[in-house]
Length: 283
Image 1 (tube, rainbow, N blue to C red):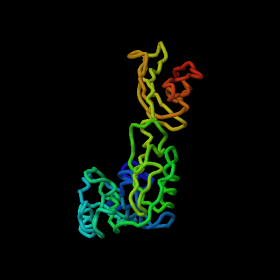
Image 2 (cartoon, rainbow, N blue to C red):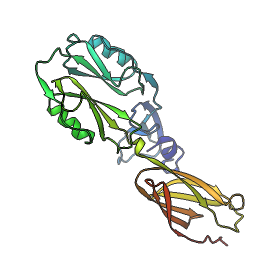
Image 3 (tube, one colour):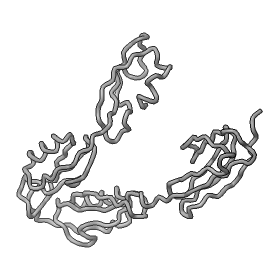
Image 4 (tube, rainbow, N blue to C red):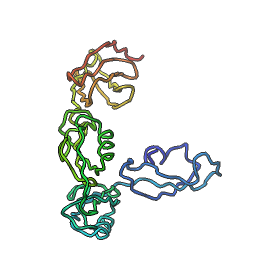
């Protein structure tokens, strides 16, 4: 639950007192309750203080360039930035044993505190090699498994421009069919999925002959995404923008009366109205 919107000032919890401490988990929403004491389901007296650990707003930091550092020095440097360093040994012909080859996320990246950054530390040259398998077009999880089974270490980069589905492998370095030393780093570029999304604009027609303010609710695939006040006498249309991929069901209500049902087709960037019902003013 989100503390500010779901718990604070909620009459359901008026009989409890809350003691708040903060933590930072980048993968969770700001304000989300991470832990509680006493645990859920326990019976307590009215007025009992419940301790909540709430996810705070993440601070943004820049990953420092630690390439060439000794392993411990690199770890301490990133830890001081409130990041979560993780050590990964890799084979490398050019870097002395125990020294940093690279990091993932890359140096210069801006990330939230608490983010895991992998430090690749040289284990020295490898005498064995492996052939990079054919993985372009695969899902990243499958590609990663194949590369690791070949004795390689995988790092991933995301492409926001690709129109391929999320986590589709776009390329690999070294290239498919080339040889790489076992234990060395292979970089896989995958689609973030952002480029696969398209935007659809819709001028929602409003009923004629109505001069009152109306509450419009917009649902996509059964989820309420927006509530707004409209007045047909002020404007005959209400503009809306949808972003996604594939198809979605759209339902629009006015004062909780079903008004428009339609399908959003992101591929053709169109709205296909299946029904539009007359609005009936309430007496």
